[in-house]
Length: 115
Image 1 (cartoon, rainbow, N blue to C red):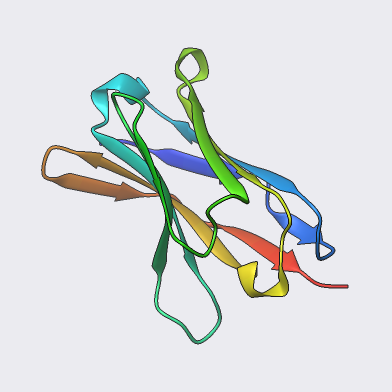
Image 2 (tube, rainbow, N blue to C red):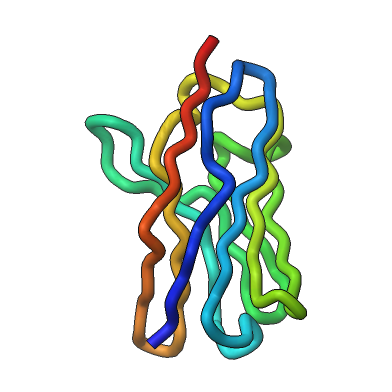
C-alpha cells in the first residue's frame, strides 16, 4: 500500500507559477510510474505529466513547455513545477502511483488560476 500526500496548491494569478509536491510513503524507485492528473470542474480527469522509475517523462500537449515533472529520490517526492499558468489550468490536481498492477491516488490539491 503506497500512500501519497500532495501539497502546494493554491490561488495564483494568470501567468504565475506554483510547485506541487507529492510525497510517497516508500521509495519512488519501487514505483513504476508516478504522475500528475487533474480534474477541472465539469470535466473528466486527465493526464498532466508522468515520470518513470528510470526518469523518463511525458506531458499532455496542453502543458508542454510550461510544466515540468521532476523527482527527489532522497525525499521520495515528485514535483510538478507549473509556470505561465492559465485560467484553464484551474483544477484539482492528483498524484498517482503505479506499482505493478496496483494503482494509488493521493487526495488531491486545488489549483485556482484567477485574477
